[in-house]
Length: 390
Image (cartoon, rainbow, N blue to C red):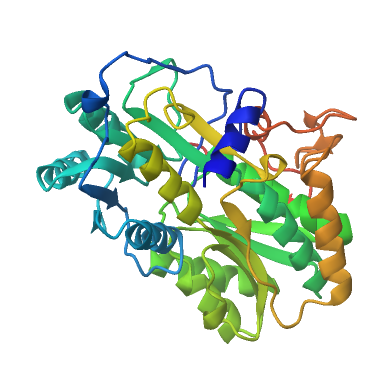
């Protein structure tokens, strides 16, 4: 744990990712933490008897919130003397602050607010309780960051690009389907990365998009999946918090499916190709370790903390390959992973938008962690659909 933290700190000054599950940010970090010289007994989070996690959805959604819960259970296993408190289905309203206040009443001095809409509540709770560490998953704070606050995330478009390779290699109709919630920069970057990955092995592949305007609405998801499958799409993927509905829809239709947020392969034993999923265990445990020691203020986590493949510490990882993925495709994925983990990126110019005229990345331009999302302001060539107006 300490080794990973030192590595990330060493490169954190030069590399910063943008992105947020259920979230987005499209600017580089100019935020700085305020390092107050308080005594160790007043250090936020120090010797906390409890740690709290709030989730926007259920812990068994085969997606975003399940990954959070599994990470929380890893903290519980690593720290058996610390009580781990969890709350499911916490709305992105003032209710989030109320739930966190209740956890503080139960002794929690370390809180994880894990959905984008929890950011304002998390900042408010941090302001009211300077002795409590509050970290937010996927948000981004401009300007000075309070000494007891931080945000964290991994880069998501990297493994999504690799998943696109799986889809492009598997499709027989050259039609891929992508069900997403909201057209935020992170989601657009994911869709574009998926299409670019698919096109890298299959130039004829196209990605058809449908948005649901909800992070978890199974009825809307079912309708979107049915619409895409009715257009001869034979590979489905998604950017949704709960993933079971679309995964099952693909399996029932005899189509392939690429996962997101969590391993849902058990729901599609025949059609599962692979995907990307969160592995929060090490990062969560390390944040708790730093906080419990009284070292949070001024640490790498008292900031907008971002990591990716080039750091070697991205918590968003590749899922296991499905049974139909060939050795040739696995080799193509491995080669792409090596490239984007060193000098390359899923976004290597020239890249044109799907309007046929707008240049998103210039010839020879490599998408950097601190700018790539912001440059994904439109869908790339090969994506069929338009970004809905706000």
